[in-house]
Length: 363
Image (cartoon, rainbow, N blue to C red):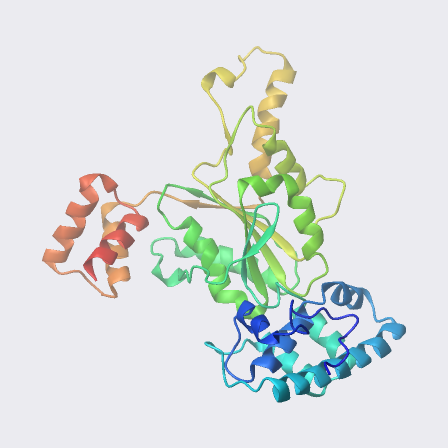
């Protein structure tokens, strides 16, 4: 007879059905006992319970949670006895999964509360990169961007890191705009923040254009979680007639709601003035003040980013340094140098992106 399921902790679909083995196929399990890992990950699926505990510790819930944990242990024993399986995993367990397994093995309600306060709930406890389109999509295999491959912008990268480290330590940090020439590594610099700081609780959420309208829902979803969220908007630019820039301006500073203190906006752009304008959009020098007010309002979007870092274009020397860095060399021999220059001058131009593309073809 199948043990009674928990009341507050949702189980994977089909786990108490006639063929619970199917439930194992829906989860990317670590090496080890598959039933233990499946039920440990299920603890992070109790979002409503986690949020209640993140707000406080109602005494009445603690007793119910203790009962649920006992039911999970009984279910695990039954699954192991009824469906004995060897290791089905293909990866090492995350720190959050080990902590959840410890709670499942022998912890009580107080230990589960501490688990939520340290690691939050799914999907944020189990993934470090996401895409927001109006719905949140975890990224199982994020770009392992490496800041060490970026050359020529060491001061900018140092200021970016310093700002993010303040953010991770709970101190005030400034929204960041990285602007400059194409292919200079702005996007790589942002993605490398996840590579460097994910183990310290940083989560990277790329906000796509279609997700901007529903950004307030994302802010509420991450509010109060233990992780720190960099909301990343790539290639940010608006046409003057597009009303979306006004909404973003309010989100960054000026909306009636308070932005969570665990959120930091970081954007990249090829231009400092984020509103594309034609000369015809500019008022005449003798125009009414209201006309110039419109120009100032458009410039105010960029002003919302308190830290603005410039990435100027590559020259030939910097391009060759970048090629050497991508190839793991101190210097380039004459043959490689000539080939790298020919590759760039075929129309690709001098940039970090071109350097990486050349190195990819050379390795």
